[in-house]
Amino acid sequence: MSAPETVDSSTVAEMEETILRISSHKGVEGVIIMDRRGSIIQSTLDEEQSKTHAAALSDLTVKASYIVGMLSQGDELTFLRIRSKQREIMVSPDKGYLLVVLQKV
Image (tube, rainbow, N blue to C red; front, side):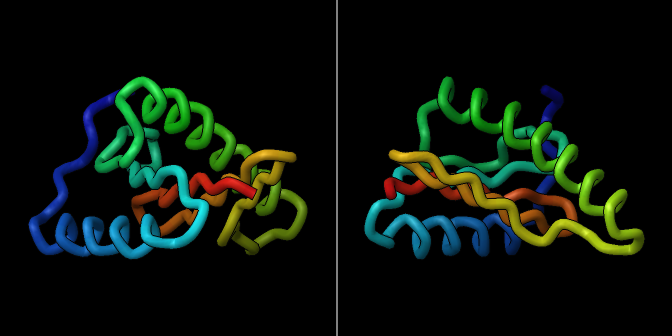
């Protein structure tokens, strides 16, 4: 994984505010903000969990984006939700970032 892109201070403040707001919701286990390559910018998880989730989810998001575009030309992925018996993983892709929320079901 490469180093994250440089993020300006106003963007960092906005990210911190977003993490605090989302983390306050019931059942939220963690929040990760990473660039599209999977480089972690901020995370509420420990380093090992953050790296594992970032690597897997950035790859999955790239593949899901490709499939959406392939199946419907001109369309793009706006949200990805994965739900298991115990947890829900939500990925919200933005211009250069991915916001990931891990939540108990």
